[in-house]
Length: 393
Image 1: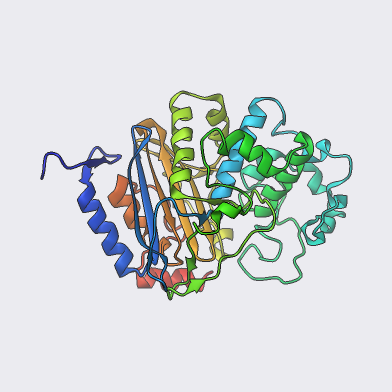
Image 2: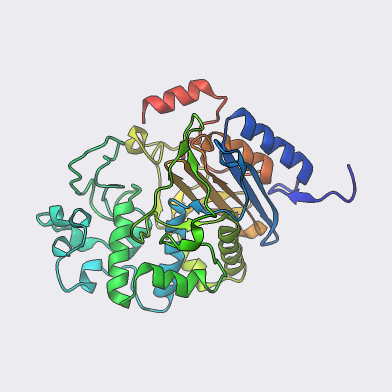
């Protein structure tokens, strides 16, 4: 090996050269038909490797770059978790106080410009009075992910919102819960989500190409999403700021956010201590779909749990804190290991990307702890497992 060649440090102390990592990821991208993919790795709490593979637009064969704007999907939630942790640390919100106590009207009577956003269906179910900010951020409200999709993944066009279980008793991923907390935060502070995010996250971290709203400067800087057949998906422009999933960002910007979180945790910040406190043990077989209501002890060894907007797992190298993102044509995953001052960010504009996540995590930083089956990150070359998983989702 060339003694001058740069090296990536892994969790177990092993290393991989940049060139071998480049080669391996390119092979995976090509073999699994991943239209575009970016990989960022953190050692010593800072970015040491960053590269883009594939295309921003497969049809036009435009090369993908790390400073292009991606739909961030649910990476929106990890930023929101950090924002709310700041507010909680400053005493602006009590995470264990019912959200109803912050409002002048009952939650089912809240008025929205878009009527379908409301919670009118809950008026005869007083359990809404128990929901707290902590429940919203740790996905234990009992509300569905989205009102038009059932807990098992079945599309329900009527879009009625209801409880699947008593708030605070189980884990079930819920964008609806996240949105409810956003509305209350906006009420408490008198500021919109975008204003709060700019003030507390985007501007301080120089995340100039990140926003919960579409900005004119994104117009010629974004990449398109792609289907499993590498068909280009027309850009969908969000029409409102949504904590659960409207954020646009770049791999470059989001890596600034991850570096900041790593640094805070390394310095024993009360904000990250609050954000990464375990709130709910998770024993579901998978995070979404029919398997999400089946119980298992498969993730008992990693003590799968949830904090404020971030998942938590335990390894021989300390805790890992993760957040994924999944939307039409875009698939992302991030995880940090603060005790090793290490982390990794995968961002892709392809519906095939999750099929290489398991191997990229392993080859990149030796992460063999991310619960890939729970996340439904079934490898592209594991046809039996993919067939089984797809039959249950």
